[in-house]
Image (cartoon, rainbow, N blue to C red; front, top):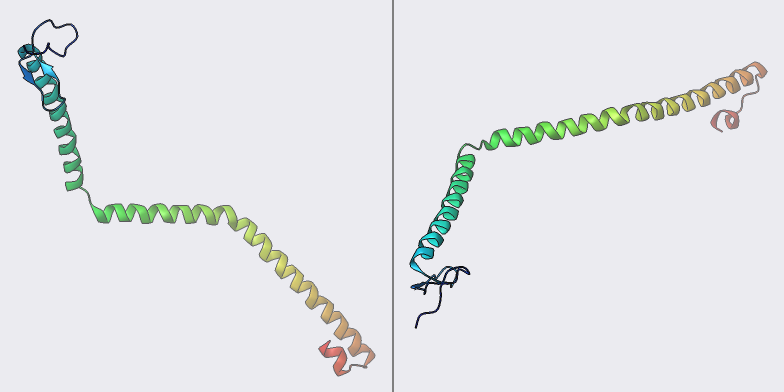
Length: 124
């Protein structure tokens, strides 16, 4: 005697075993089950076709160009965010060097005025 249909509410005896899900089904539920599987397969085929179409129109040069543009934007943003800090650092360095040069000028002028310049004074 065949087992009952795997659908809970069905009282019919099964007529086939579905090899996809290993369920015993009556002929009515086999049709529903088959329609459901076909619907899922058709949906999957549609998704695959959509992906295939997207890949067929994919322009690799355009993708690489966009990536390049995006990278330049990141670098530009980084530059803008850090430019002021870098400028300030450079200005401080220049001012420090100018101060040292000014001190050296004063010292040399003082030594020239005294006319007692020695090699030690100049090189130290």
